[in-house]
Length: 483
Ligand code: GLN
Image 1 (cartoon, protein in one colour):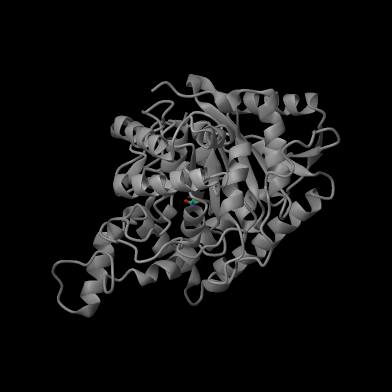
Image 2: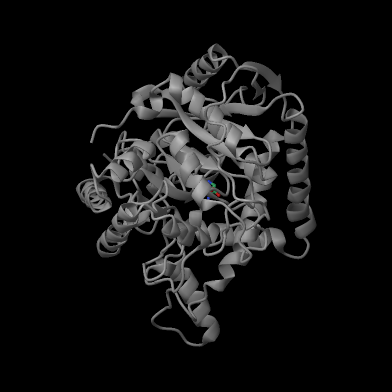
């Protein structure tokens, strides 16, 4: 049953063909069977899940259930969950039990979704491969010798391995879209400000945005509709009415103009990714869309701008982890300053320390104008490029990542190579736009390829509708890895 669409699961729950307790039990059994191999979960919550499932069954019986009531769900371990370990993939927070729920967690509880566990991730969401987790790397369900992508790799792998039908993630520079691509699932990151960041442990606040993973765009629409909405506790949360992101699912593609940025189709894309993306675009044309070439002339500046701005914000955000009120504290130290230094040196992994050092450097006196201010100017140019491109098209399409999933360890010695894997995703966050990745075929070694759709501000419903039309005509999203 977990392998069915959310619509079918909800219908089965209503008809009494399955109970929420049975679904939660099945999900937990699948996690238990597969997690040794995939390492998608840091924590599972059997007792609270079964309790929540029993409550969901009561709601279903009372006729007050919504579309997510009784559906097993996993949260990325970046979201604070009351009474449940919240590690953010870090040694710094190995002992942190959050005293409150993130806004997204509250909303999904209210919707009746059943949290079965918390998923593995790159430490503080910094990474593109999930190899930066204190809890060891998550493995790709399509090939356990390969990475699942990052930083929300645990959530993507959990959905791909059919442990849960839906999971949350966060995307600062691609962390929903890129693991969705590597794991062959659908993932959406909405317009900045759509999903509350309250209780979502901060990496780079002007870029961070919660997002949704599911097998299909239709299921992503249901999850995102429950996650979004104004929250006064997040000062960047947009004051907009709640939306039904599934409203355009049945809209035909005839007349849709898909922009293809010539910079995305230049050198750098692997041959197998190109072949799958080209075939998917041909399918879109067959379904009635037209493709037009557009240009994002400053796209090549997105990686340098992002890798100045994100570490700058991270260096500030992570200053709160000092070992005083919560988190790891060094066992032995000489004075207060030594306690801060030792706790942070022990609690943060290498990549997090690298980002803090880079961020502190680019914000320091004498370098601030040369790096940080310059990067902010590039950010504006990148956003302007998208605005110009959307004069000529309705959505933008291209690859999500330049390659399919690579072998564990292949890029860990070379951070710059790792950063370059974010080439197609980071510009979207710099501009604050919505982006989606959906399965578009398979490359060498039978590994999934993702197609990225980028929308104008607040065009989530359109992106999901476009992807849904593609998924009605293809079955890439329905393929499952052998377990
Ligand atoms: N790979 C990018 C980084 O390491 C993006 C991560 C993310 O979106 N959280 O910063």
